Image (cartoon, rainbow, N blue to C red; front, side, top):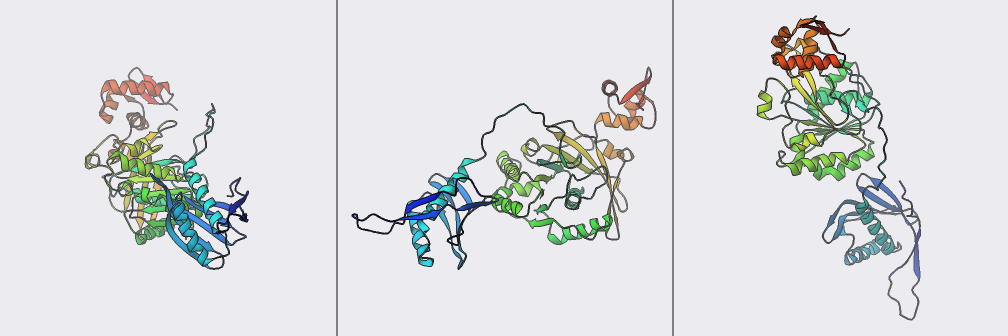
Length: 434
């Protein structure tokens, strides 16, 4: 991307010592082309065959600091160092070094211009835009129901609950355009980046082979993998460059705790991590998170991701995944429960069945009504509708089935009747609306 206004001609003194009585000849240098790759800024002068690249730019009390790489089309990389962009002595010292490598290049005007533009680019931020009333239209999903497009999504649950396997299945769906069960349909194929803090390449490749075998595919090009060890916020510049370079449309972070770094239960590291994720836009983001010991032992109702409240507050959509405790054999029965959304209404729970068969991994839909322990984690409204699916029931029967109080059941039934989902069959009997 060439920035407007950078093609102007610079007339800057070359700086060679000359008698005061003689005018110093100006050096004319065409403005550079500027390319941004993630957070890296690359200034190129094709006529001189020179490029200056700035990365890891940071504002400090004494000015803007960053790493600079100087490359020549003839000699290749000729210099790399860290520099204070606003420091005249630092720039002069670098000019002297570069003049020894390529004496003919007008280093002083090129370096001054690049440092100035790099500092401006770091400080300018996003432009101000007028806020006007305008309806956003239908909610956009990268994968229908589960992943809001271009937003940060969270999938949380207990260890061993199928979160990473489901995340990899979503990666396959997005990369290939293949539909998954339970209405999980990708809107459009896009390259995927899997950032892994917990496992290893071999394990994910094994899971990928199993998923593809179950889906009848041999390959899923467009899925990139990177093992992670540093906090996500400390790796943002490098990751943004890779996301830009590979045109990544979907980023998976597995998982929240190590991605935060130290003290994930406190606000600062959680906010830094979520802000780092936000900077990956327009790529859609999915964060996998765990639950606390107390939440893991909870037998009914919703739980929350482990860590700071900001992992929920700063996400735009949050789903809880639970594994049935009645699992047996080769099947893994999962319930997915929508716990938070910023726009629109919470969606109905989803059921998935994962079957492992001779190396292949098969995904299928699951009726949560057949999994009592998973059904207990759904809302009362959902459980009442499941109970009424077999036929009309009395309030007393529904109280016994759901374990909720009579008044609560009655209020919920009336609310469902108001929304057109149930009807009164007899004075004390209710049924689903046909």
